[in-house]
Length: 411
Image 1 (cartoon, rainbow, N blue to C red):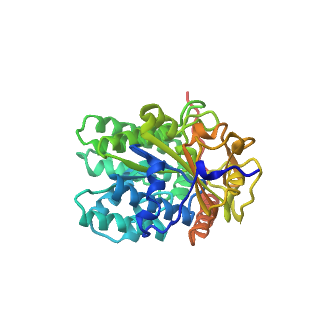
Image 2 (cartoon, rainbow, N blue to C red; image 1 turned 45 degrees about the horizontal axis):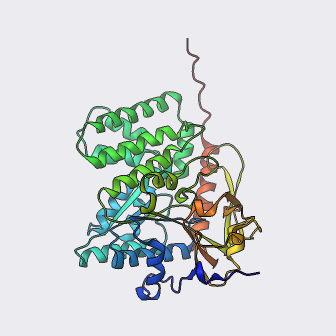
Image 3 (cartoon, one colour; image 1 turned 90 degrees about the vertical axis):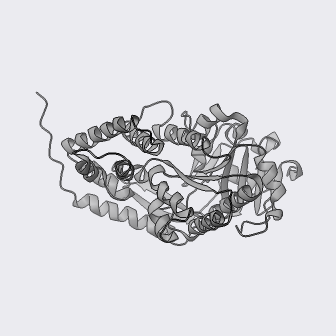
């Protein structure tokens, strides 16, 4: 029997960011309440509809509810240039988004459109909005951008140029291949230089430098992540959100569903859980997913980073996914209040889809306050082709790397 959805499902009438606020104003008000942080997840990256709805929600929250910051799962150091641009800095949206938003999330028109709107808003409003990255530098594979940001803002020392040379490893997959191919001596010099740079930053009054240095500490900790407890990356993201809240009234945080959930993921506390411990009711965590449409799948070929076959197929819904249940509720875009949903709706639901598998969720109301479900979604044009080409280029680059020389044994 289909449950009466009136009490726990609201329909999103428009996903066009330029649509009138009043179309969905009450739904947004009910969804957000008085929270200072609205964390909006996504079950897959590079989905057109996720970009559009997130942009629309952010605009409503800025215009109607006093939100002042947009925070992305993107490098903190790189995001400094994006914030400068939306406050009137030089350059074009295409270049700023490409270089200032990591994981290649800025290489799509929906993201550039949001940045253009933020720049226009700031040019005509006294209540400015800000952009922040909250993640590790270089798509979590290269410390170079954070090293450069630190060195640009602090007194120079001998050895800085050599550190930057070692740290600037290139783009995401290229950096992973180059780091893997480093000699032990070069890697030791790089890591020692990053630690020393962090110590220099601690004595400065520049809070941006200290946060960039914190991203480098988390970067090095991720190289040997602990087997239990939160990942250093999620700790850094949660701490960065706290740092941003010292500067902004209310913010939207955008990341993968796995990061915004309140409950642990495979036994590890995630960013959402860390924020929940400090924010409580000041945090609203919203998952987002879809029922049908294209889905990217990764098949690991070897232990080398990014050595994957990348394929694109049609999404199929296993019966134990939340997408399978929510697909039956009716509206093309539905907001489901998980705290008010009848227990039967979630009986036997084990997780939410991600890259062809399930991200396990034992208790959905404990993980998310609400879930936004699209019956159908589409990929950002060109995103899959760029992703596959990037992985193939990394595979060719790895094949051309000379074998690492064996390190002499310690006496």
